[in-house]
Length: 141
Image (cartoon, rainbow, N blue to C red; front, side, top):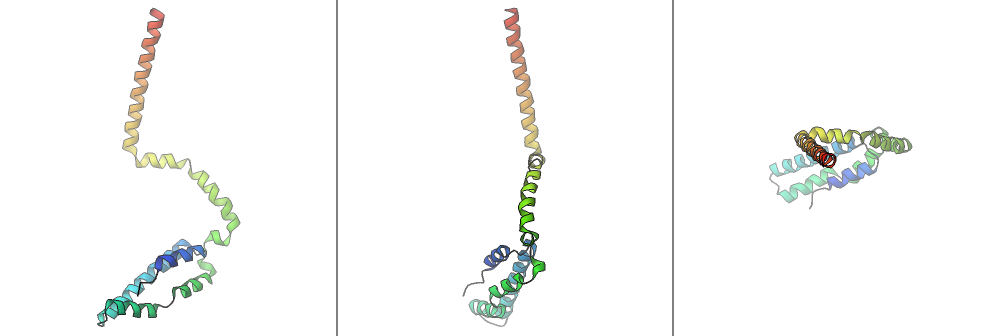
């Protein structure tokens, strides 16, 4: 028998409007509990397959967990509680974060940015020197 589909439960919880922190924690705790049940059954001398089956029986149906968490409004994310506000806040937050993206990228890649700026300065000086020589050759020529 297969291991319960914990990633699917996590996705279902998020789709149901459960806050990501609560959904991830619930899935992690269920995975840990399942592993503990399997280890306890194997310590009693059962095979891996029998231990997983016994753990799945003791754990129960994951849809019951989903139903129970959906019935608790304090576990819902603010965006699922106030979807119209989220439709305004999320785009505004993205627009506000856009100017910060180059700064963050610049800080993360400071050495590359320094080399790029040095190359840009050198190429600007060379171009300015070439334009000066061209201008002098035209005027003096």
